[in-house]
Length: 125
Image (cartoon, rainbow, N blue to C red; front, side, top):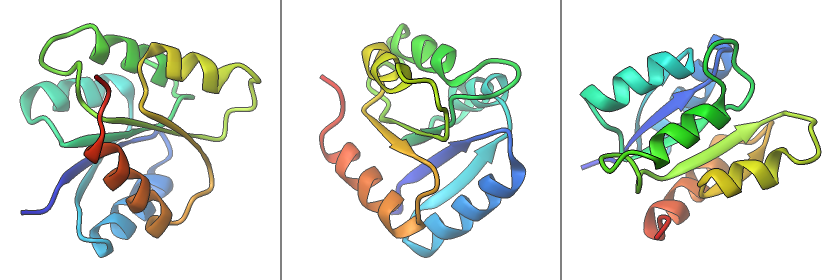
């Protein structure tokens, strides 16, 4: 059975490209266009991992990470941050909040799939 990955990004073209690329790499993939939409989807149908952008208009990736790590049902969910954010402390903050790994855009589907598999083998304690 393929692992399910939720892509969370407010750019629909990015979501569609990553979903197609991850499906080609053997994953089941779907997307959410906002942090709020992602949280609702995660609670009704939890994925095996989440690929999360930081810069979103409603609930940003920092807040989503903070929320997921503070609830027992999602505290171990693998979170891969995938962002083009230029803020110098963004990576440090995301990891401090509980993200498993911080990746910079752009990234190809093959490399993203490799990181997802790696993180799923060794999630946060």
